[in-house]
Amino acid sequence: MKKVFIAKLGIERLFYECICILPINMIISFTLWAVFNKQTTVFIFSFIIINLLWVIRNSFVIFKNGKIEFRTVFFGKSCIVECSHATELRLIHSKELLKIIRNTTQQNPVKTNCLSIFLPQNNVIAFKDQNYSTVLISVYKSNKLLSLIEKFTEDNQSTALQQNKQSVAPIPNYNGSRTEKYFINMPLGNHIKCYFKSFIVTILSPAVLSAVLSFAFSRIFPSLDFRMIFIILFIIHSAWFYVFEINLIVQNKLVAAIKLNCYANKATPAIMYQYIKDVHYISSIEEQQNILNTKQNIIKTPHPDYFWENVIYIELENGTVALLSIHNHEKLYNHLKQYLINKENSL
Image (cartoon, rainbow, N blue to C red; front, top):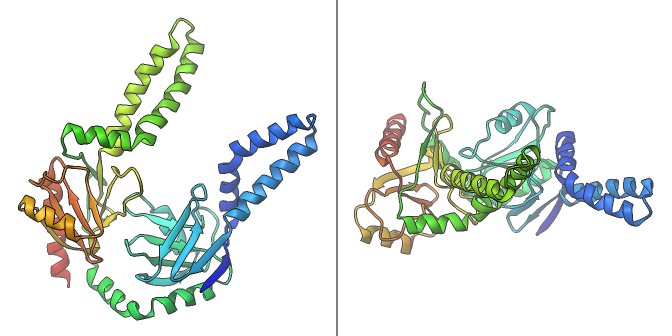
């Protein structure tokens, strides 16, 4: 069964869409303007048409075989969400939507096709997916899409809701830093592999930034050599981005979640504390090999398979397993253990 819905983008999202496409739009429009004898009408017509096509491209939400496909707010990236394990399914109004959007972090992720920072937007469908990420979808005929999701999840809904209620534990109060950062512990060879696998962050972005800054410095100070400035800035930026953007696990204490940054191919789901059911240290290489061979959904720091000492094992209620090899592991381990104790005492 396939149903197509029209997204209710809202003025804020439409404005954001035009800003995102602006550089490409300007290049194409100026090119056509130059080709057609610099006619202003050609530039205006091209500029408007490209914006319209971009907005239309991002305006469809498709429900098919229990999956929802839509374009996210950020650069119209395609997102497919499985509805079979949807929990906390409901319609929300502007106040709750605004609160969710403003509290979004890497450790408290949101998948959404709508944007509401200043202007209100009502009747937005909200639920948690199989990775416990919050999904927000705004469409016309939202009640119809909501009924389709409810019908598809009918068999699992009561069990999922019961598990969700049992999972919730009070989040402790913190007076110190909101986040804690842990660097990944692994051999040099694995650091090198991780560096090159994350080339967009560690190579491409530093190269572009360094080139722009080097050009600016060489113009301001003509005596400086462009290539030497570029090499120095590239090394500094590349090392900084790897250490503080990739080789890092961030613990957000306020939302009670942790997130890995070291996955190059796809975004990893956040590990939400309220869904953790087991935490312990890996006891042997055999245990780690058994986990890698038998578990399907594994979140793993890029340490080698033989690297098992002081590796933290975390299992979530949906079967997802995390294997974390980090420096200062005792601090994170003790914090997770304490959270589980508080969770058990609150039930």
